[in-house]
Amino acid sequence: MPLQNRVDPFGAIRATPERGTVTGNRGVLHNSHRQLVRTHQSKRWIACLLDYGGVRRRVMAPNRWTELFFLDEATALAAGHRPCFFCRHDDALRFATLWNETAGVAGRARADDMDRELHLDRMTDDRADAGARALPVGAMITDGSDAFIVVGGGVCRWSFSGYGPVIGRPDTAWILTPLRTLDILDAGYAAGLHPSAR
Image 1 (spheres, rainbow, N blue to C red):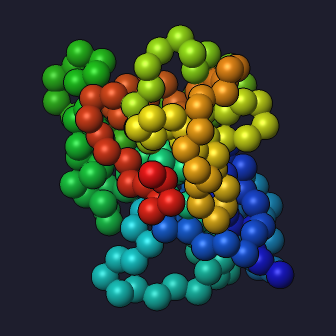
Image 2: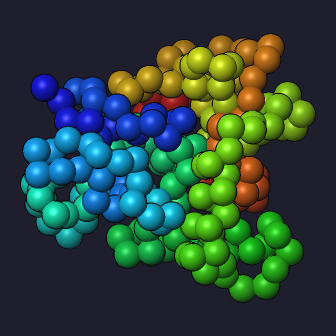
Image 3: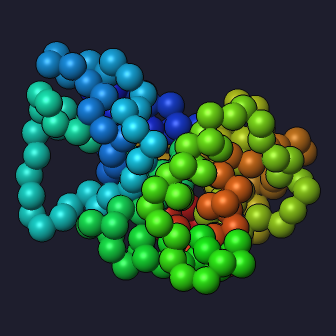
């Protein structure tokens, strides 16, 4: 029986046997039986390297943070996560710098400020119309049931095992990726994509 620790682009945590290429953290979400008891413990939702320094962890160990897994970084960003300042320091610095640049503010954004704004976005069901603006590669949209990633020439349907073939954008769609993160992708931040995204 797979553990409930795979995250979809909507931010929901599911139980599925497929593996991810990115891990993440929202705090301690599980009990001593390795069962999920909450969806988050704090506003700090981060996306981490799957392998860092050769460290091996027992997944969902008692009283330890809950290892979450994503198909790729684009999925983690759509779900409301941001790069980790510890294991992905350079990516996190670039993300934080672009966060402020896209808002017309000098310097780098603080983690707490980004986390606070991303958390507000995660708590709303309001989604912007995906047809109202051009979308960068790596942005995620939904037709109300499925999720799609924007790639050159169209979109690809998302699944836990990878992306489908390139198709045209759905006639009616809403943006899943938080709007501030979307601005960062627009400004040149290249989200890591699963090899199936072509």
